[in-house]
Image (tube, rainbow, N blue to C red; front, side):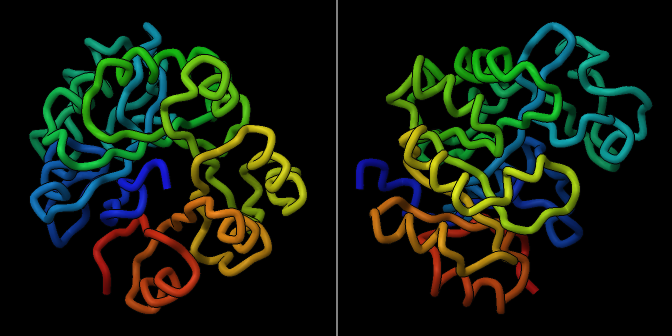
Length: 241
């Protein structure tokens, strides 16, 4: 396996957050708490108004900050002044996060495709990770984003995020096993991150047959953890029950 860090340690989903830790998702405190356990972490990125990669999950600011508007309405500097609800953490750029963490532990970056502009998204992330010396990988539901890295930064590990459960948020073709396998081959992905609720399935079995690491999200219970250990190579987890 070329990228052993993908399976070496679990990844805390959006950092180690929630009521047990008191940290907000996608915050520096949550990431540092994951590293304190010896774990890596997964984070999300979206674009600011000035095309900076921001560490944030939702298009809207409301759920995590109480502010109105969308993340793309504000510059990175403006966003850096907005506190995450109930904490002293603020919205940070990906660059800020990578400059502030222990680089011994791996980072999984999910590049969100909700804003469109896949090339701009990929380029913004690449600018922040191209000089980063720690273990890092990118992943996305959106093949155009993965394609950018395949073409322009093939040495950065890239993965497909996938599910077979249609929640109405993605185009119908995203849930087809045949199309998912074509993405895996055409994009020459280094790993796949699959929905724990959809395991096992022919796509993950196909990857394991081809020695492509299978990660799963989001493991939230001990039963899911057992399932992950049976059908995948690593898990992206939240605090277990």
